[in-house]
Length: 242
Image 1 (spheres, rainbow, N blue to C red):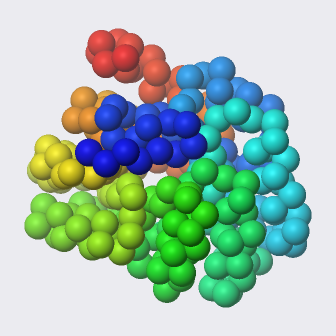
Image 2 (cartoon, rainbow, N blue to C red):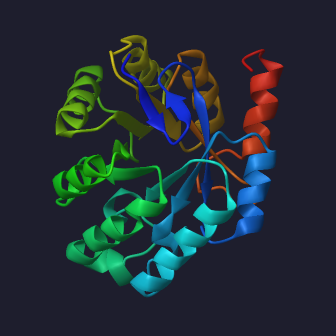
């Protein structure tokens, strides 16, 4: 397994818990996530994408200066679950420029495999020695295992240091497909789990199968189909996984 790090946190040798912040300039939320046992914070900048670029960069700079946890900058496109369609999300050039502007203040970026700006964002991040998560989301179902494997390989070939595959599992067969992908144990960090009604279950199984990253939200602030960090930690402890 290559030595991939998001800030000071090594990724790939054991599951790391990422807590998503939908108010990425809220220091109280960051402190709450840290106290709950987060290893890494994800700043969902698409939630504030309607603000001027300089205001978004200032928000990232503020939290980077006050928080000692590694930071992932995510500016999720609307077609893959982004929170907004306006502001910088309405223009790929502006979205790319914002990624470039926040790179000095974060430890990693998350970019969609399907994004037309993926190659440019990946190149810019690597030039600044930042880790790159290349992600794929399928919100209606879980593709076949062969398709999942092909997507993971494509994301890696695109330049992903870490590959993240997120699907919706409607049946036990779909759940098995998703975790068969993790069972393959590629020679690079891979995260895979489900959103929707089986979100918490999927993260427990993903943790057991050594998914490189496990995502959760703050209580009352979690994304749709995402468990809270408190529920995740309680369940992991109950099943002897942490």
